[in-house]
Amino acid sequence: MTSYQFDESNIQPYFKGLSHTQLVEIVSHFHNKDLTLSKIIENYNLGQATFAQFLKLLPPLLLSDKSCAECVVLPLIRHIKRGKLSGAFCPSCEKVVLSDVEVHKKFFPESSHKNKKSKTKQLSSIKIISISKAKYESLDIDVKLFLHYLIDKGISKDYTVINGKNLSTDVLVPNVRYQEYLMTTLGAEGYYPHEVNINIDPEIAHWYFKSGTLFPFHLDEKFVLWRKIAVQEVVEIFFGTLESKGLITDQGAAVVPIMEDLIRIYSVGQLINLVWQSFNSWYNKYLKKSSDKMHIANMIIYTCQNRGEYKKQRCQKVLCYDRPETYPQSELSKYLFNDVLKIGDKGFTKIPCPSELYSNPNIVVQSRTITFN
Ligand SMILES: [Zn+2]
Image (cartoon, rainbow, N blue to C red; front, side, top):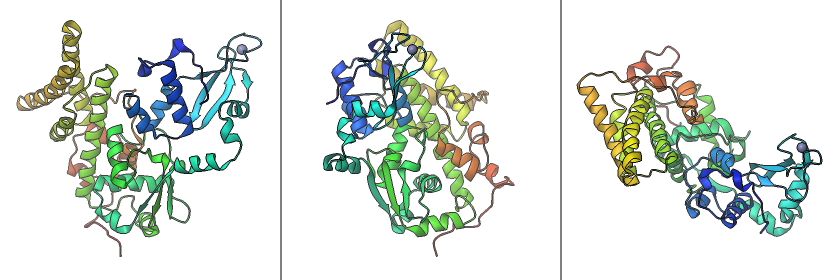
């Protein structure tokens, strides 16, 4: 195994508690592509992270045998994507000390010679799945939406393959748990979207591009989508807030149904307010008493539920919060609210409501869902 050195004083809390050897293993698995990112996260007991987040969290490598001639500091190497490192640059004057080609030779010597072994490795790092028309028809509406997004961004010119490599590694889906559900339903459990190539019946893509509307489904079904994606956005912020403070919940499964109830009376922005209020009221108690972390996490979700119902009964106003900067809108959410529903920020600030869609002049009302043939 290639050995890596890091600036030990500058390792993210995300990797806290891991030994140097474990960190080297993680970086090796990441670049050798012999484990999926989900498996790496599971094996090393790391927190949930999207691909883009994980890439940012990985500690830069140190080039230990050649320092910057002027500044006499050790150059840093960044992780660009799986199997790709940046050149080594001086952190002080930013001069490139070693080119990315040289860095690649140094850290991945095996893949420089094109032997059979590295070829099979490369092949197995891309998962190939197939979607037939029958499989497509059987999918839930939100999985169809996700697939339409993938077609829109990644389909080959002949409409036969969705190329994972064409997809952005930004946040594609509101939260990691939901992404896992979508990928598993499509048949690619444990893989990230850009690690998968999808062989798709070309009729599906033809139909998609010819229907003249991005999501040729009835407005009632589009309304269901609004609710589903809105719930996943709140869930993302709920778990993200807890996990960033090292809190875990054994009531994880209860979070979605509770938010599904609350989204009937509150917008995403209002629910973020409720999550924050509940979090703050319990987190302060936790700091004072340092009660059991699991207990606090469970109290937060039930407080959210009670507070939401209490305020509704008394007709108390709940202010709509902005989207927190640390949770940028996912690509799937932008696709749904901007391109498919054409309601933009209302997807975030309004309580999901069919009349919002029916009265929208930008949206084509379909009397029925279009099907193949
Ligand atoms: Zn320098």
